[in-house]
Image (spheres, rainbow, N blue to C red):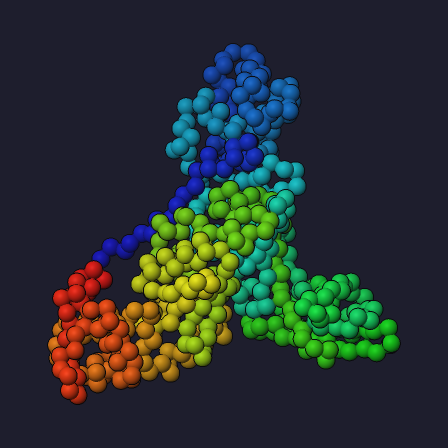
Length: 470
């Protein structure tokens, strides 16, 4: 049996703003392209003629003299010691007889945004699982600055942060472009004057939220260690604060003042990567809570990518309710929730979305399919879902699902009592009565007798209801 090959979307160099990005090709190829282009001008001064031509045709050289192109740019390009702007590369292709559309992006060693502060990355120009997952994490849980200097996201779950770092490594983001820092927030009195850790003073910020005085600060940390702080007030009193970054669980905090919490903030200081997020993957910059929507490329991607994205997104903005026996998800953007709804339906899961934009997965069958196919990453959420499935004795019907089940049963077995119907749908008799009466009111079910025990049958309208439903 042949193994199915999953096809991922491949980006082209022309998908990026060609005058904003530059590339470094494989040494032999880059050298050949430049020499082939110069040959088209022929004879003595061919590189000078090429420089004049590029000055006229390429936006990247609007503010560059042709002499500089001839004396500095071209010699360094030939030695592969300087990046070539994409619009210049396209112009060079025309002379060397190469087709831009057929150009293999695998020949690109590094991609770089043209800003002097940006760092190059080894981008594979593929919309694969690592890129898709990081894109949606930053959309739902993070932030992309309007100047593109950095993108960031935070989590109190150590396991989730480690999971994202694996994907960043897979995307070949340079280690010096990634920062991790601990951000702590606690309830505190107004008269806090100092925070001390190991004899060093920590800078902090005071603010009020919902009528409560709070302070927040950031600090370095190491996995597997405990950060200890002393919080000092004007009256020379003090209290201890402990922040435990242990194992793969949630970060734990202890403080006598009141509520306290901490998250790890992971920041990507790489303009090249951040510009890719913006131009290729629809990540909005600045305030974006109501603007986000799923990258359209997800819907035509392999199932394995869809599954990974759903798991990451639910880990960010979803939760498992033991009491309600359901998985819930919420973001302010209704377009984003609709997109997640569509992905789930592609996997055979049928969620509900209420008027407040909360998405819920509640039927036992859907929860079972979810648990078998989707990894929520965070262990505590997976444990809650398993607990629901273990203790779930009856199915929870979605809206109108109960009525549909009753009508289906009557289409196969006429003249059944409410008790018999209840046994077949694995529900209490009162629940069966509720759906039967709903079917009678809609003309889908008819009562056959006037004396107890009443029996029920499907009507012709009920048969049409099943046909259209199926």
